[in-house]
Image (cartoon, rainbow, N blue to C red; front, side, top):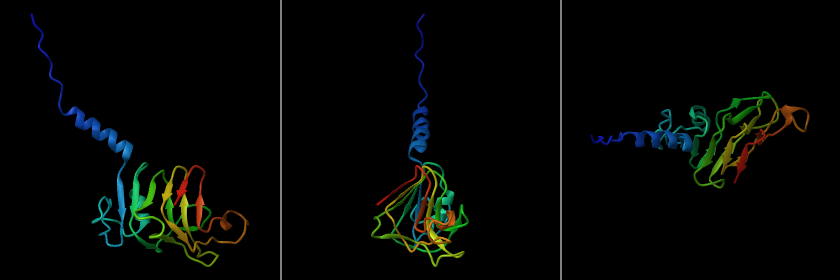
Length: 162
């Protein structure tokens, strides 16, 4: 008696490939002033018009890709009661398209309760290719947590470059 050769299912490879690559590479969310601001911001046409909105819909391991411009609106408080222009509160990468000469995150002064820090970053977060300018905190000097990090508050194991 001869054994019949079993045929392997052909749909298994594409499913396995999708699962592995979506876990490894994550999703890219886009930011552009000319986007339609249609979540989840997964193309330039539907891009968020501010960085924080794209950060908010991102999941761990995702990338937020930001095109040229000066981003100077919006704000979110995370800790120490300081408003941040952007707050990266999960391990994602926020990256500019053309680098710090073309992409700016601008805070707001003066010192005090209306101050806006440029960026807050949690553990595992990455910020690449931005100029951070005009960031302020609630108080000057080292008079407590509210007086620190006008440009950037960076938790341990976060990465900032370029």
